[in-house]
Structures are given as structure tokens and as C-alpha cells.
Image 1 (spheres, rainbow, N blue to C red):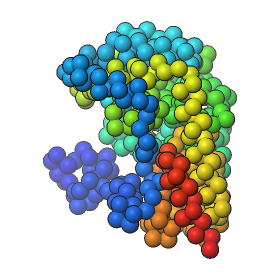
Image 2: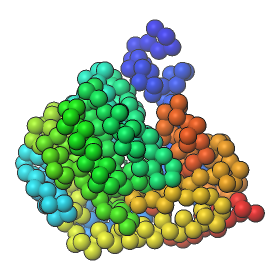
Image 3: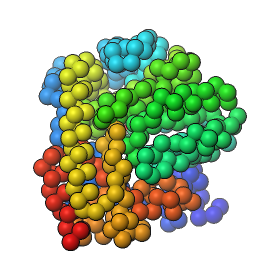
Image 4: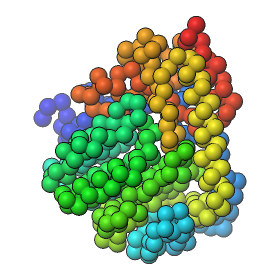
Length: 398
Ligand SMILES: *Cc1c(COP(=O)(O)O)cnc(C)c1O
């Protein structure tokens, strides 16, 4: 039975357990614990330290007072599904039927889990870019699928088109596209997204997109894959309100796409959470209907925060890949004499009172060498916190 028997077998098989049977500790938990222990500024985990728009928070408390406290409908409350459809129309000219082409999920994470479990069979291949959001590796493994990747390389983190062409084959069941991209902050251009659609057609693959940072783009335009010619019929689009509205703890997400795909995902979703977040669903509808000025303002605010942290990192001696989207900035510490960013990140709290995450946390072991000196820092924090982090980082140079 190897190291694990019985109930442990599946999680162990998916590489999610340590050899002693404990949950494999993630570098995220380790770094957050280190931040708490040392009082360092935690730029590791990507959660905002400020509340989102007051009217959205107010709508949630109103909902609780008004009794929205029981199971909502399986696909989500009708008004949120309508607000999601209206949002897709307003921002992307996508016409979506709120009754058959929209599903409310427990964050984008449940959408990802349900999509992967619904659409792949053991042995199928799922293609992602690499580095990849850590949940992708775990979910693909749990589904018994093969995880193939195409590298995104420093400094611009755009995929090489020939490598992408070679990576998609008739065994590829899902091309999972995270755009804007975590952890690199890359925003993919139209040509890359069109190539993905072309390859999906040629090899009969489904495109699943994770667009949780759709509104957090800086000097770039977010193009949903589903809006490209020929894409809709084979694209499932996932998003959520956590990042846009500073409500990462609410876990309200959504899937949109052709009815057959949404129905397939719903069949799995009903056995995962069934439903979630009754009082937060109306609040999310309020958020999605905020005027354009809110969305423009949220991006401008984060762009200013990005620039505060970027200046700090540059003056500390890091080389940067300035991100066009997301909450994150990737810095190369090699100019500071750092070869192993994982080791550096463990020492950074005592060296400078700041916590970051090594990019190797987002890549498979056999690719570690390419990303060895890179660190991800989150800039979704109060400006004063980012200024303080910049001041502390400056001491690295001394
Ligand atoms: C934060 C994040 C998620 C998770 O979204 P939830 O709505 O909190 O489940 C998914 N994908 C990426 C790339 C993220 O950064």
C-alpha cells in the first residue's frame, strides 16, 4: 500500500499529503506564519487589507436582516444571474442567457473544481501555463488527469506560440487559461488568445478561462476568450467578485458559457457545495451593477499601489517585470546576490521585515531552475503599508 492506505490513498496519489500523512504544508501557510511571528509586512498572500465599496457591504447586511439566510436556488439567485449576464454584455458585448448560460459558484475555485471534474476523465490532459495558480495543480491531480504546461518566461511572461502549438494535442481535453495571470501579472494579447481558440478547434479541446482579475488591468485591455470569433461554443468562462470588490472571504463566483457546458458543470457543483453565500449573492449583484467609474477607479487605485511597490523594489536593487494585471509583481533577486528565492524568502522577514513568495511555489519541480531567483509580492495593500514595505526593502541595498 506504499506509505498511505485507505482514506489517504486519493489525496496521497494526488501528491497532496506529506509522507507522514499530514497535509503537505504550503509555502503560503509557512510564509504567513512567519509574517505573524516576526511582525513582517505580509506581501505573500493576495488578499486586500481594505474593505470594498460600502454599498456592496451594506447590501449584504441588508440581505441578512431581510432573511436571505436559507439555501438559494441551485444555479444562484435569479437577480445575480441577471446581473452577471448584464455585466458580460456591458463590458464585453457578450449576450448570455441568465437562465441557461450562467451558474453561480462558491468562488472561482469551485467553478474550477467542478469544471475539471465534469470535463476530464482519468488520463486526459489539461494544459495550463507555468507558473500556475497553485489550485490548478491540486485539482488536476485529484481528477486523475495529466497536467501539461507551457512556460511563461521572465521578463514579459508571454507564451512562445510555437511551444503553445506543440503542447496542444488530441489528448488535450482542457486548455485552462488564467488571464490576467497570477502569479506573473501577465495579460495575454489577442494573437495569443486567438491561437488558443484555433488550437482548441483543431484538437477538439475545451477552453476554461479564469478571469478573476478581469477588472484589475493597468494600461492593457482585458479580452475574454469567449468574446473571440468561434470561441463561445467551446469556452467556459470563470470569474468571481472577491478580487474586484475586495471581498475574497465571500466566495461568490460564476461560470458563463454555452448551456451544455454550464449544465455539465452544474451537475458536479450540486454535489460539491450544492449552493453557497445566500446573503452575499444579492450584494454581488449590487457590485456588478456599480457604475463604470467604480471599475475604472479600482484599477487606477491598484495601479498606483503597484507603482509604489515597484519603486521600492527597484530602489532595493531588484529587477522587475512590471505587471499589466492582477495583484502581483514578480521581482528578480539575482542582482542582490540571491540564487535561491525560497531560501531568500525564508530570511526576508528578518533581513527586511517583509514577506514574499518564491515563484518556484507555482511551478513543477523539474522547472525550478528557470525561476529560482524570482519572488512574487502582492500590492493589494494600503498605500501606507506599501510605503513602509518600500522603506524596509531599501535596507537590503545597504
Ligand atoms: C484568487 C484566485 C482564485 C480564487 O478565486 P475565489 O473566487 O476566491 O475562489 C482563482 N484563480 C486565481 C488566478 C486567483 O488568483
